[in-house]
Image 1: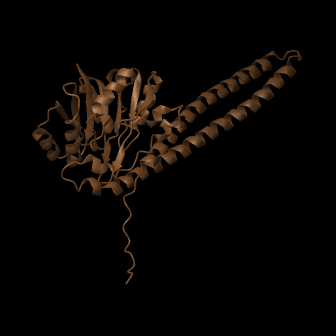
Image 2: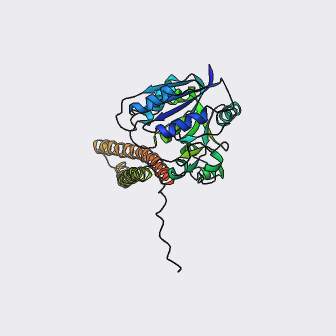
Length: 339
């Protein structure tokens, strides 16, 4: 069995994917890993490019018909076909350094029941697309750092480290993915399928830690403004969901308060009736109502806890989405003449 499988979902990114695969073919470890590319319905050019590639690392490709942005399904396909004990997730637009796979293997040798969360640095399209030959050192000078998980490294949000997991760069043992139930394929569209899986991984006892090195370069797309608009729409939807959940919590808490007030009244009535002859039938009715109110409080408490958990997850998704937002460079304004 191979030590690792690098799983890459892709869609219509032939140029970036070619560079990602070339970087993976320059890894310091040999014979211990494979690459699995899952094409989520690209045009034939991508499949043709993959077929024509000559890599020294084993490369397998799987193709889905296009039916929306289905990263969760694509990654599940990669995991199902993976032959490596470790699954390394990376996006199709990541330029990884030569020690990338070796670093993940070493991390998991020292952290058995742990999920690795990796950093990245962003390189704008107009920077990396100018270069025909990849010069990672030159690109790195114009890359912006990853601020998304810096809070985890300095202790912020230490109680919920799973919220920082992102499949653009991360790894976990294959068996743990199956134990957690794999990605939820009902996630269609941009984002958060990895955060939801990470939560379930935490529920089966997996811990999370930052892999400080290496730091791949994220080659940003040309259509960054279009993606920004899509991401904003997703954030607005999450914001509306948060408001709806908040209203549901308020409603449940209001109902529970009414139940508690009524329970106090019933307890006083029952206490008064204890000294009244022939009050058994009324006493039984009041006690039945008291049990009904008590059950209402219990059900409301469970509902509030469930809603609060959903609200926490929504807040994390919102925070994660905000940190992922990135505008293109502002247009250069003409400088006034000094003549």
